[in-house]
Every structure is written in structure tokens, then in C-alpha cells.
Length: 124
Image (cartoon, rainbow, N blue to C red):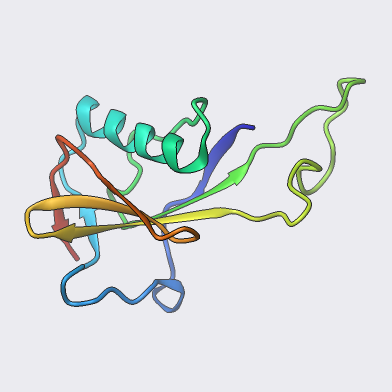
């Protein structure tokens, strides 16, 4: 199962309200180490070692939304619309927060928290 970035900008009304202990944040200085930490965290959250994350993910916004990439059928035709392997068409949403001095990625569906080592982030 392959995921691709669809949207990294969120409308304020769609954002999850963070508690005072979890201010919304964004990555201020992306580095190869911070991109690797983000890619690994998303891969673990989705149980998918094939996740690809854009170099500028979470730099303009603290929200990351992924959806399954379309898969070709056995006849090598691309299915129109939703991936048949995901009958509900569910996308996965993550948001970044700063907890004390740590950048933490939260998977919205499961509420799992992933500390992003080597990542510098700032509250919004």
C-alpha cells in the first residue's frame, strides 16, 4: 500500500484544537535528518515502509494529509476514483505539535504520538 501527500495546508476550521500543552507547530528548518524522522514516523503509523514525504512537508502548515495512491489493475489499467483497496476512501491526517522542546507528530485517527528527533519546530 502506497501513500502520497495530498494536502499540507489545512483550513482553520478543519484543524484539531490543540490543548495549551500541545501548541500547533510547523517545521522551521527542514534537514535530511528531520525529513527522515518524519518519513519514519509516518511509515510506522501506517505500517508502510514505502511512504514518501515531500521535502517541504509540515513547513508551511502543521497538518499533513495523506491518501492512498491509485493502484493499477492486473491489466495495467488505472482505476478511476478511489483505490479499490481502500473501500472507504479514508485519508490519513497527522498534525505537528510542540510539547516542551520536542516536536511531536500526532496521527489523528489513532492519537499515537511520534517524537521527531533532530527536528526543529515552532508554535504557530
